[in-house]
Image (tube, rainbow, N blue to C red):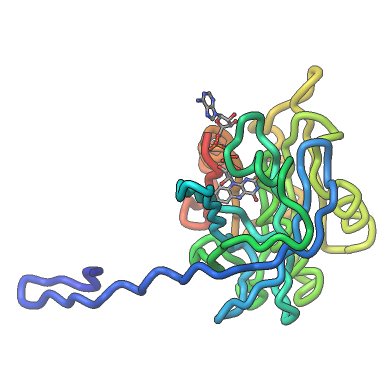
Length: 251
Ligand SMILES: Cc1cc2nc3c(=O)[nH]c(=O)nc-3n(C[C@H](O)[C@H](O)[C@H](O)COP(=O)(O)OP(=O)(O)OC[C@H]3O[C@@H](n4cnc5c(N)ncnc54)[C@H](O)[C@@H]3O)c2cc1C
């Protein structure tokens, strides 16, 4: 039950939306993206359209009934074809990502539910300018936004500040470079944190804001520490905190 509105005179209580049902999705393609990340395409039958930035929950069930479920952002732009793309980083000892890394095969049926998420989404009518800040695999939902923007609203200015350990680990590096070259209103700032590189810092945030102009929407996604630090830097730079939306992938 959700409390929608309350005053001293009236308390309105409405039932919460039921959780989305689990459904069987067919794994139709697997492709390497980086040394640690693979792309997985699924044929799904969602009962509602996907919005850029949303995720799905994936559930695995062992023969003894043990279940594990994790969330994965949708990398593909919203489309009508019933195909979604996930990009999953195989973590050492990772229960679910490890399954995808070493066991999953094209043709498998995997349980998932979605699309999920109402706050960390961008629609073309939301406009911009869009400041997207991603750390590691946190770039995945931002990629969906960039793909959607390119198809539906290429005039919306956008800048992606992408922090990754080294160039080999940059997800969709070639696609992003081509977009930065070919899309007049899109700019890419890539920062490599290993081998003497820089983490996202105040100088980088200042440069991003200068290049983009006053952002209309800001989306930050990555690990907890990355998201918190980046949001703080933006607020310190004078950005209105109400413009900032965050998605945290965990530790
Ligand atoms: C909204 C949302 C969207 C997300 N989108 C993506 C995405 O697009 N792509 C993506 O790759 N991830 C994404 N994630 C993260 C994802 O949900 C998982 O958290 C991630 O894949 C790790 O799950 P796992 O089961 O593989 O690892 P887990 O088994 O949960 O383990 C996590 C880490 O802990 C370590 N670990 C596990 N057990 C132990 C132990 N006993 N001792 C020490 N260390 C241990 C593992 O080695 C691993 O590094 C998203 C998360 C959220 C919340």
